[in-house]
Image (cartoon, rainbow, N blue to C red; front, side, top):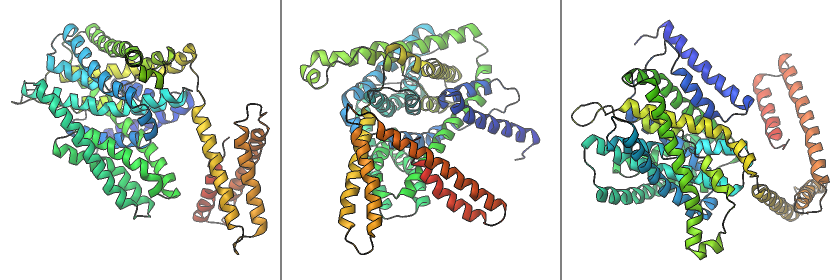
Length: 530
C-alpha cells in the first residue's frame, strides 16, 4: 500500500480541520459536539476526499466501549439512585415510545422503507447523547436535578435503544420478528449485561488496588469498557449495559484505588480520548456522506430535505409529548410519589424536552449497520437510514443544543445552587478534618510548632470562609480576601514561570529541571479558583 502526496495532503487537511474545531470551541463558547456535527457536514462536501470503507462491526466494537465507559465513569451513583424513577421512565419508556413513533412516521411518510427498517431508524435515533448532554449542561446554569436526570437518561437509554436496535436489525436480516421472544431476550440481555459488568468490575477492582503505577492504571481504565463489552457480546447479552455497569462500578471505587497522580493524569487522558473518538465518528460520517448522497440520487433534494425534517420532527415531538406525561402522571396517580417528590415547575419538563440531543452513539449505530442481509443482498435503504440519522443529529445538536441557553433564560430557569452548597460543605468538612488531624500530630517530634501555627491559621481561615457562605447575613468579605490572595498568588506563579524559562534559555538549567519545577507550579496554579 503506497502513501501518495494527495493522501498526505488529505490527511493534513483532516488534522488541520480537527485542530481548528478544537481551537474554535472555547473561543466561540459553542459546545464541541455542535462544531463536530457541522464539521462532519462540511467534510461531506469537500471535493477530493477519499471514501473510507469500514467493516460496520468495527465501528461499534472499536469506538463505542470507551465512549460508554468515559460517559458513565463520572456518573454520580447517588444522583442516579435518587432519580431512578424519572431516569427509568425516560431510558425505558421514552426510548421505546420514540422507537415506535419514529417507525410509524417513517412508514407513513417515507416511501421505500419497510417496517423492520423503520424500526431500525427509530431505535438508532431514540437515545440521547451523554457527551452532548454533559457538555451543553456545563455551558449554562441549570438546577442540579435537571442535569442529573439528563445525564442519567443519556447514560441508561443507550442500553435500551441498542437492544431494540439489535432486534430491529435482526428482523431486517432474517425477515422475521417475535414480540414474545424479543421481550424475553430483553430481560436476559439486561440481567446478563449487568451481571457481566459487575463481575468484570470486581476483578478490575482487585487488580487495580494492587497497582501503583499511573500509566498501567490508566491503560487498564482505557481498556475496561472492552473488558466488559466483548465478553457480553460473545455471550449474546447487552454489551452496552455491561460497559455502562463496569464503568459505574469502577468509578465508585476509583477514589480508593488511585493516587492523586493517576487521577490528575487520568482526567486529562479521558477528556482527550472522548473528544478524539467523537471527532473520529464525525470525520468518518463526513468521509462517507458524499457517497451516501450519491447513492440517493434517485431521491430528489426536496424529498431528502423533507424526509430528514419529518424524522427530526417526530423525534422532537415525541419527547415533548412524553415529558409532561412522565413528569406529572405518576405524581397524580400515586400520592406517595407526590408527597416524596412534589410537582416540579412546568418549566422543568419543557426545558428537558428541548435538551434531547442525539450524538455519537446514534452515529456509531448507524455506521455499524450491516452492508448485506442474509442471502447477500444489500441492506435495504442503508444509505437513506444513515442520512436520516445524520439529519436528526444535525437538527437536535445544532438547533436544540445551540439554543438551550436561550431557552433556559426564556423559561427563567437558573441554577438552584445545590451543587455549590454541597461543594462548600465538603470543603468545610475537609478543613475540619485537617484541623483535627493537625491537633493529633502537634505533639510529634518531627512536627515543628511554627509549622503547626502556620497550618492552623491557613485551615482556620478556610473553615471560616466556608462557614461564612452559609451565613445569610454574610458580606462576602472572606471570599473577597481569598480571591485577592489567589490573584496575587497567580501573579507570583507567573513570575516564577518566566524566571524558569529565562534560566532554560540562558542554559543555566536543562529542560528536565524546568519541566519538573514547572509541573509543581502548574499544580499549585490549578488549585486556584480564579
